[in-house]
Image (cartoon, rainbow, N blue to C red):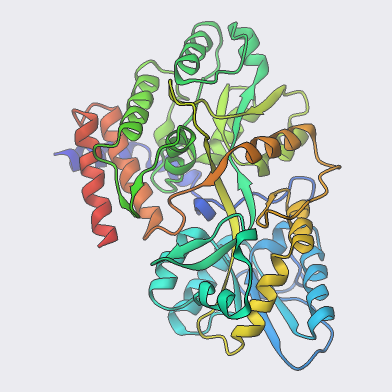
Length: 452
């Protein structure tokens, strides 16, 4: 009966959902291209979009050429990634052949390479791919390679693991702070940005009563269910909570997750959320905020410059995500990233590891973070953000007061985990599931199947 009810609800939003459907990326949505530069492909314009575009080969070295497949090159200024890898060739004599394509195409090509054993030597990785690729042996155990090199991994901001070993290293990070429309708060009579859940709900009530804007948005279109990680689970992480326990699903009997579900039920019942959330995806949420119709949203720093440039009259800021009442500990901040890994079939494992270490060196990593409008993956990197906006610098300061977290990164079939949570949340919000405990028990059962 529940499934029939859900199908009817989802069918009602199918047309709208198809219009806005998109693919998910690291942490399940690929960060947007830096707004100051339109995405530029590094290959000749005549190359077919669906095929990897080989860039100009680096100067001849010792005869070893590594293929590096990623989507980063088309999201950076023209030639920027080539310049960085040319520096590696100059140091080592090892050539790098860049295979740059948009995220969706890169995802398809790397997945195909994993299945056929033809993956490029070094690959850009989304955290949601790591579990499956590592399980099938398509990507190499970086813990073993780092140990063989004597590499100090304490300088890395994070490592994405499978069965206790590292298979992906985040190169740059895209944090997700709270965005706040200050004009809406002023119009509503909200004097300060809320810091607790009680203050947040009080602000939402004033916004509903005194403005035409929505207070918050959680995109719940099941075609791209990444709203569960970025706009829902981020509330759990900001209050020191977790959705996993000992690396396995830990949703039932979980006080922080339970209270977060109830927080969203309150927002839904009191109509604090944007209308039509079941049909919306993240870009729709960003559009609502950019057009002055949304007071609060959780979104990546990659959109800071975009919003500033496209809506110069919008008065907004970034802030820490509100914490559950009574929580005084350090907050986790949701994060997406550009990750890097090595093909399990590459004949040049040592050279590949040299290249990874080069990309993670403080100087190179700082340059990458600076160009990508992101935060570094090496804790010793010191990017030059002097040309970035005050809001970006504020977001960086917030990032440094939190710990990075996204428990969907490295999880098995992470998009399916989000989708099952999304579907059950819709049923609960609409009253088709009676209690929070019932909802979480249903999700727990679905998630446990994925982990078995």
